[in-house]
Image 1 (cartoon, one colour):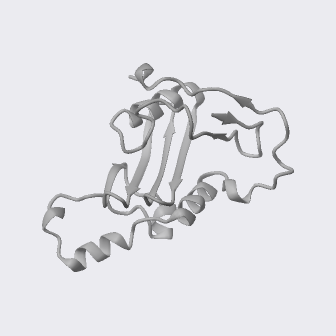
Image 2 (cartoon, rainbow, N blue to C red):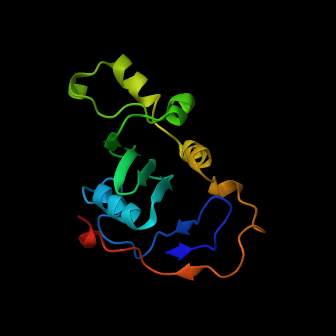
Length: 160
């Protein structure tokens, strides 16, 4: 994990390797991990994108409360994380609006089409990041200075 020096509006952490088991937003320990992290840091935001499995997620926790969490896994055709109500930003973008509501197993083709129209893409995740705080793809390289640190996030087993 790499933690950058502060940028206007916060501190960014990026990592893919050496993350603890259960860090993935599709796994049951993820909400607890995010809550625990926010107890220590105040507000924590999480954004994830993976093009090949069509995996897109975002979450926001503040002072130990998970306010909103959404994850779409296109490879499996599911929304394994849907916590809280969609925010005004999600509504305006038209993404992250629906989970897997009861009775989804019996949806018609039209219902599946309507559901799929609310699933996000890579650019939607960056747009959500920009609306909530900072769009990482829009950061000028000159803004990020030398001096970041490498480390590992707290273990998921440390969450409650």
